[in-house]
Length: 431
Ligand code: ACO
Image (cartoon, rainbow, N blue to C red; front, side, top):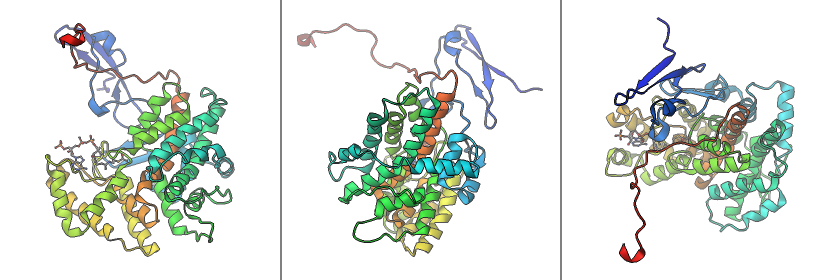
């Protein structure tokens, strides 16, 4: 028997029906194309939180949440984490193939030569109070890039799109470091083009005029790995936001600024900051049991931050890699952080608790990343900014793919209206 190629939906009350094609990808389940459903039956579909809805076709990243598989352009995350670098992964996400040596050299040159912030952009920071959250400054500064590069940008032009991608990947660490330095009252540092991507960022973060910075290869390697693991994750909330904004024809800086704000929420990228806050609040391993109890209590809005995922119903492969790396990095840096013991105890307790087992709640990418950032001297408020630097590669790859896909349409969901039926206006004195 051959596989069914269509699915038939019948409204039994009206007998109107729709025969809907199944659309198969290279991997993963086939999807029912419901494009003609409204015309055929007069009904929309309803899928709160998009649990069963594919919003696009994409050739960038594949996740099998049941098996714990993550592929960038077909390459397993484990192999990229072991053998690649963030900048090479960024090239891969953007271009679809791993670069040959000359292609990589040219890409690295282009990124290195677009790292400067416009001097006027620096003035924007002065408008923020010193304790402004760095994610607020980052979103505003990236949106402001539109003001500098909007006029000479044609989103329909492939070369312009590529230049915007280079600019965003190049400038994001410069802007991120400026957010940090502004918050602690340090002078901004110019990017050093002779340094590699991650070293350049660490230099802009931590160098002070009064003494030379001792660069740590261990710190750079750890950060590069974290950037690889965070570079893309198919149609997550922030990437879908970038695509929705991009579908209107908005410029890439505006689209990615929207992605940054979506990432900030604690249910998404903000979880890395929330995990560390939670571990600090728990404080010691003997309080883990109480935390697990609270997380299970439906009358308590406390959740185990860094646990659970919409797609992974098995170990998040990124969490596995980061977990291993945490021990290694802390060991190599000679950091003894008691929060690691709390995290390990919490993971152990949750993984054998029926509540978490039944719901297939496992540690996600953010559970251990904060402990590493902390060991690298990166403050908690900057954790989601770190995530944003890395995810920019994925966001802009998706934005470009969207613009290269023929027949792309503005994203415009429907709704189930549950408000008042039509009613007449009542004069103020008669209400
Ligand atoms: N702690 C306690 N219970 C949880 C948790 C958690 N972290 N996550 C999910 N649950 C429970 C829910 O209460 C729900 O229980 P119920 O079936 O009895 O009602 C069940 O597990 C399913 O959870 P949902 O919220 O429906 O799952 P959803 O797919 O909508 O949410 C999410 C996924 C947002 C990641 C959620 O697991 C969560 O809030 N986790 C904590 C925040 C976090 O770590 N976010 C980072 C995700 S990774 C990333 O974006 C980079």
